Structures are given as structure tokens and as C-alpha cells.
Amino acid sequence: AGNACLDALAVHRRALGLPGVSLAWGPWSGVAGMTGTLTEAESERIARHGLPAISPEQGTALFDAALSAGHAAVLPVRLDPAAVVAHGDVPALLRGLVRGRVRRAVVARSAVTAGLAQRLSTLGGDERRAVVLELVREQIAVVLGHEGGSAVDPSRAFQDLGFDSLTAVELRNRLRSVTGLQLPATVVFDYPTARALAGFLLEGLLGTESVVHVPEVLPSLTDDPVVIVGMACRYPGGVASPEDLWRLVADGVDAVSDFPADRGWDVESLYHPDPDHTGTSYTRSGGFLHTAGEFDPEFFGMSPREALATDAQQRLLLETSWEAFERAGIDPVSLRGSRTGVFAGVMYADYAG
Figure 1 (cartoon, rainbow, N blue to C red):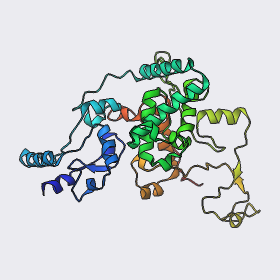
Figure 2: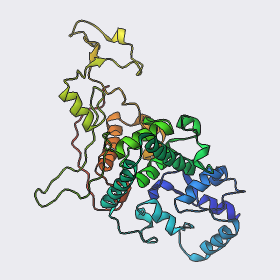
Figure 3: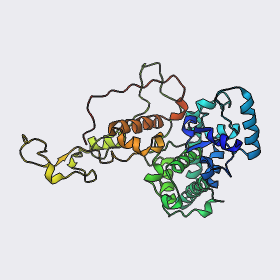
Figure 4: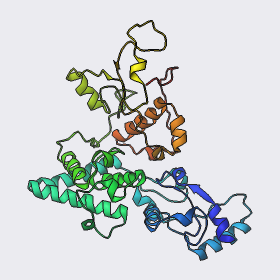
């Protein structure tokens, strides 16, 4: 009975600022609740974030302690403070329990990038690619639970290796730590093999690709009370970043395209040459965000049903807000609990395609 009750004391990992699934901090084996379905790899992944398993003996003792505590709600948690700190910024919910390091992330990450880039600059082309590929394979092995990087096929798609949205973000975070580069949450999906991802990282480290590097110092706040330190955007014409927008404008790209074919529209019935005809369109083209439907609800703590019911403009606002922080070299999770304001200019119109 004690084990079952402890298993009911669940907390959502996203409340801690950690990727993962809803899980209880009770014994992880021999229970019929949520924790009983965790695989060994999932348990190890959670432990790497500083929240190791509670043994049956520890769970029983904690349950007895909870009954005698006199509090209406208790949450037994086993913490590994060193692992929590090593993973990055300490989540706001745990800052009273775990003392984080004094962060100098901007300078530290820049130093990591410079050091690795300097090492690569002394090597030949093939050696550079081999070093970065080995680095990527080692991090993949850690995330997926392999014994070493040699077990990772560099040409096999990440999806076939067993990656999902959660492990993809974990790999991004680990690569960000070891390279110092600012990487988008979608980098594993944008470069879907270890070899492709290693090539992307190598270009970023050597400064031959538009990977966002963290500046050594933030812009001075003394010259202007308002400064722009990060931007993100979505526009028709395949624009998914400020760099894309610049290229579109500089190259004079036509952002108008045919109607999207993946939205269930009957384009033939929708079209009518008479602009005054009710309920139809007198054009077959327009400015569309063709990737507007590509949204990762789990990343933002949303269920698929909630995401489907959410206006696409709101989903885009979530994505671009997160990206703007990342591109500024700021860990979005580090702002949890801080005095940070959000101001959004909106218009009263629902998404129309």
C-alpha cells in the first residue's frame, strides 16, 4: 500500500524545467502506476538530470515520514545536487534546495567554442570531421544508453536510432555544452544523422556557417535603454529566421506561392474568377507559412488535443519566443521565476491559413 500511495505522489517534470514525462518519485519497479512503465533507458535519463530512483526501502521510509509530517501535501524526492547543477541552470523550483553555480554562461560558452575551434584549426580536413563526428557519436551514446560512440551508426537516421522529441532536445543540450554553440531545438531533425549533424557543427565551429555564436560580452545597456539581443521570425517564402528574411529581401525573392496542399482544401472548388462571388477566392496563390502545422506540443508541455485546438498564431508565438531567447544566448529555462516581462503586439483576427 505504501508503494502505491507513493506512486500517486506525481509531479510533472516540466514544472521543474526539465524535459521528460510525468512521473512519480516512488519506487520504479514492481508498481502498477506510472513509474512501472519506465524503461531502463528512461530511468537512466532521469537520473542524469539529478533525480535518481527511490528504492522500495527508501520509498517505504519516506511514506512513513510523510504520514507523520502533518502536512497536507508532501512530495518525496531524491536529489543528486551535483547532477542537477552539471545539467545547467538549476530550475526555479529547486533553487531553495540546490545551490547553483554562479553563471558566466556568455563568456564560458564563448571560451568553449574558441577552445574547440582552435584545436580543430590545427588539424587537417579529414581529421577535423573525424573529431567532431566522434564527439557527436559519444553524446548520442550517452543519451541513448549505448556503451560508447562506436555503437552509433553515423549514417543512420536519428529516428531509426530511437530518438524522440525529448531525447532530441537532450542531445541538443549536451552538444551545446560541449561545443559552446547556440543550437535550435530542432537541430536533430534538421540534420537527421550523426554525420550530417557533425558537418553542421564543424561549419559553425570554424565560422563557415550561420550558427549563432554567443558574444563574449552582452551589448552595453548604457547607450540605449532598449536593445535587441535576439530575434526570431516566420514569414512566407520559407523564412524561418532573421537571416532567411534578409536573404529574401536582398535577393528579391517572390514569397507568393500556390495554396498549400496539406490542409484539406478543395482548391478547385475554392477558386472562382469573380471577386464578388461569395465564399470563394479569385486567386490561386498567396503568402503562406507552409510549415505552420509543424509544431512539437510535447516540447511546450501541451497535449496533442490542446495543440490542435490552439490557434496557429499562438503556436508560432511560442516557437519564436523560445527561439529569440536561444539566439540571444539566454537559456529560456533560466528565466523561470525571474522578473521577466512579456509584451506581445497582437491583432484581433484568427489564423486564416
